[in-house]
Length: 250
Image (cartoon, rainbow, N blue to C red; front, side, top):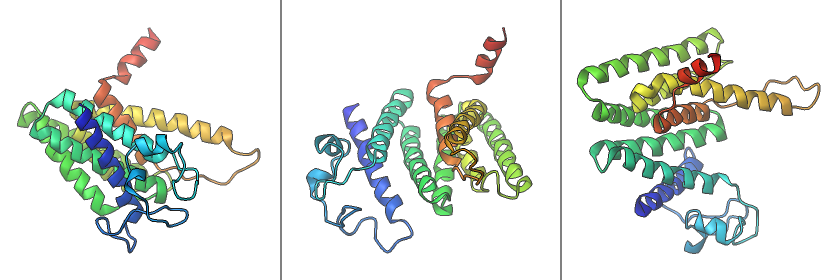
């Protein structure tokens, strides 16, 4: 378990590097890691996932700049999901496809948070890895076809919203992302779909309440994080929002 958690944390750290250097002149595998503030190359002791952040009190070793919480939180999150995936699947081929899917999903979420766009290359890898995961964990080929059909319906819904709103409500790339997520979580696709909108609605309300009085300018909020959280919440917890709704009405 500890090894898997460490692997997930290290993977999240590497994913952060990929996201930061994607579409730049810097390579992923070449060049030393450096401070984003002062550009100083970082020593190995400053690059240990989670541990370095805690030891140096959340500040850069070279210049003392306060570091973002995003890196240690994503390292903690992906490490935990690696462990949960192993508990759920064991050391199977589906498990390796799952952790690949989760790693690419993290890259998509981080890139969307930074640039409010989803790179098509990462989307293609995610959909392919999720499709392989869904196929391997499905009890039968017939069950996989059912999941595939549900995934298409969910993707078509997002595409419909995009075209009807002329791209103002959400980007078109959310459709293939939702398609991949539905394949990944299988029977939890519809609960994940509902959770995504619930989470998005709550966050949207909070953002509106925190706007300055009289501020009317529209705010673009990336939807990929809500999709990822909603679908994975449904998958790993097996919670069903329809049961929650029925209980609240009874």
